[in-house]
Length: 130
Image (cartoon, rainbow, N blue to C red; front, side, top):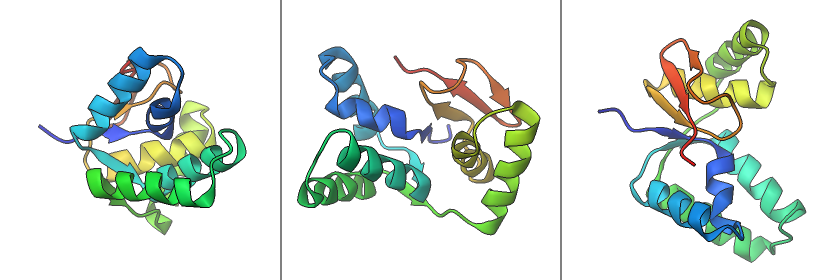
């Protein structure tokens, strides 16, 4: 079974006041999975701007993600794929970048709360884990 690709919104539930969702997000991440540099960037941005973490705290979060998940690069191929997906499925370019990397790495499941549960885009199906 292929590892699931994990969207940034799932990661960010680690910091939620909803303990059920926070615990479930922790369980998902402890099981391992795939993320992209795009996910790392989005998590860092939200942690700094919205959660108001210090850079030291953000560094610790990013290190944890890098050590528990396989991190995939954003490439020209993933960018080109993302542009096509954004046009075809009418999703944001940010979401399309996540989906594109999931497709290109061979994931069949994308854990995300940001897109429609059950939506299939090529070989990837969006699953809302909450």
